[in-house]
Length: 69
Image 1 (tube, rainbow, N blue to C red):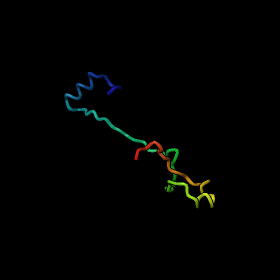
Image 2: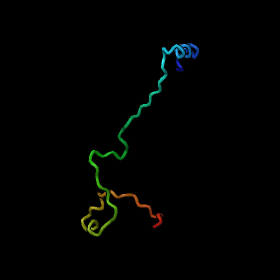
Image 3: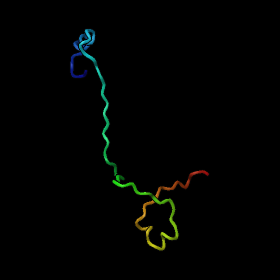
Image 4: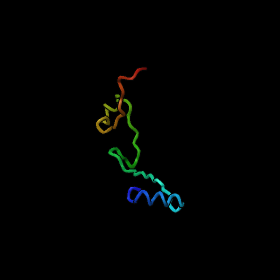
């Protein structure tokens, strides 16, 4: 509607020759943490992880230390 004369558009609307329709679209893209296979994140550091050295490559969940409860 911005590209055309408003008078002309209103005239066509009255004659029911034009319908103004708004369209929405979304674009989905890969984010910075995209993984083709979902990996389970570790919640705690265990003694076994320390012994085997697995803690060096493991990914951990973020921990909220300020949480109540």
